[in-house]
Amino acid sequence: MAHFIDRRLNSKGKSTVNRQRFLKRYKQQIKRAVSDAVGNRSVTDLETGEKISIPTRDISEPIFHTGKGGKREMVHPGNDQFIAGDQIARPPEGQGQGSGDGDASDSGQGEDEFIFSISKDEYLDLLFDDLALPNLKKNQFDKAVLYETYRAGFQTDGVPSNLDIVRSLKGSVARRIALSGSDRKKLKALEEERDELAAKGMENTDYYLSISKEIEQLKAKIAKIPFIDTFDLRFKNYDKRPIPSSKAVMFCLMDVSGSMDQATKDMAKRFYILLYLFLTRTYENVEVVYIRHHTQAKEVDEQEFFYSQETGGTIVSSALKLMDEIVRDRYSDANWNIYAAQASDGDNWADDSPHCSELLVKHILPRLRYFAYIEITERQHQSLWREYESVARVFDNFVCKHIQSQNDIYPVFRELFKRTELSSNQGA
Image (cartoon, rainbow, N blue to C red; front, side, top):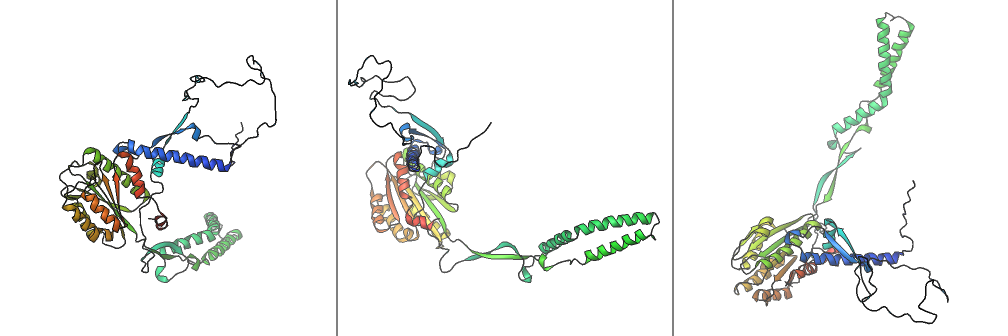
């Protein structure tokens, strides 16, 4: 049995341009389905795979073929209704539907769907495609560059202090074995033969004397091989590399006050789960600090942040004060890229909102790369939104966005962290 494998880049009748157009259209369909899936899933099911449905008309590839040209006449057998010159009427509505499983319609148009599954990794890749942390900067190419020394193998020359004695002796032993292996094997055989002759009392025979002479020659030849040669010496090799001084931390501030009902909290959790998946999948070394607040703010771990049932009144400035304290205590190094994302329903004590604005302007925003405020409410904006809007007009690293329903979460998320030319050049 013979197997033939077609390794051509384009199969017969498929042009490269048409295939690229098809793939582009195909990817847009998947992205649309992934975006819709975010709003329809449960909070705990945002990172599994997904089933994608694409209409048949969008997966067919156009092809060019040679048609039959010219004026032609033909006779079809079995025609007992029409003669030359008759016009064939359109079928009446409701007829023409076949008996297959396709999705037919009364209007004469139908469509089949092509359904397939994508894996968790494929789903997350499409979910966070073209996203990046804004304004992320690297500092390792500044004027004062820090270097670290690291072991970079061995080399055949170097200073005596870097001589690796064990590695050199191993090389010496290997060299002597390689150069004298056959001679030592022959020497051992001759010595055994000489011992046998001596046991038989044949020490004075010419053959015994010739063997003894050959043994002495082999020993002298082996002895001439130096114990250690300059070729055997191995020196430790050290090199220097710049220490990446770019580090990033994301502060997640979530309002858990009594005004945040369960639906609003679920939407806030969806946003933060997207943010957590984005950070952990896109960047290797990004720290995340979780802060929950009502009248008081508290730094918590991931489990408590997403699942704690604690609630109370609302004083937003408590979270901003705690964030400022943590930044001063743990992230005061200028090499840190500091980010923050705050989610709230906008409900706050009226006297506290100006205080929040003051904290942001004087203490927090001058140190941050980016601060994103997400207000989740269907009501009219209150004093906190108005204060934050005035801050956003002054600071370009502060952004306010409004979410009304679950379907708004992913589009807002993509808008907040959309990759720009600057973030593409700077990287993480």
